Length: 204
Image (tube, rainbow, N blue to C red; front, side, top):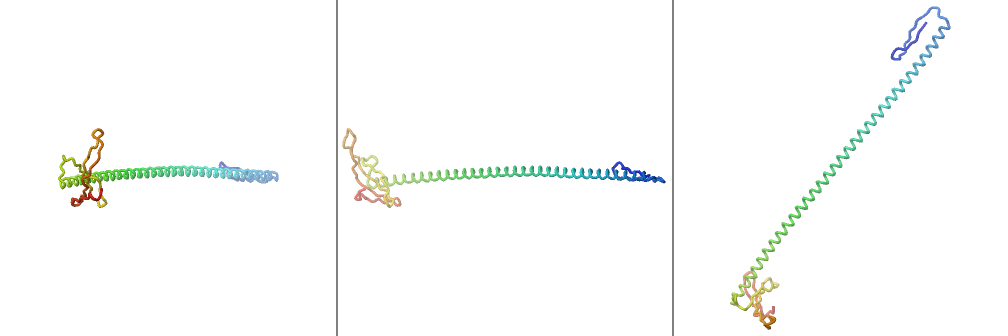
């Protein structure tokens, strides 16, 4: 008689013990037993395969989720870095703009101060030249500082010469102090060489 068994791992094991003079009934029973155990073996193999497939798909899904999470994390880090870079660049540009503006303001202030200094020097030089022109006319006309005649700078003519007015202040009303000026002469003084020209007839 033959016995059919499974080992510990589920593999099919066939042990055959022949019994002399086995009856047909015994042989039929043995064949049925073999078919049933083969069916059970097929079911176990199918279950094992399904389990392996389930495990495989579960592992694939887990790997996919891990990959998506890793990619999402990498994307988030990249976006954070990009945002930090944009912020740093914006701050750098703002700092450069501020620095440039400060430099421009400082340069404008320096230019203004220089212009004011030059204008002040020009005014001082102009005033000094006017005073020199006045003194030249005083010296030429013999007008002393205590003379009642007044010697004043009036304006520059079209040629850039100083026009000096020599006049006397006449009081017409002692009580009110009202009066008029009595012009004694107009003199043109050249700023280049100090030459004096009487231009009273020109009617300044």
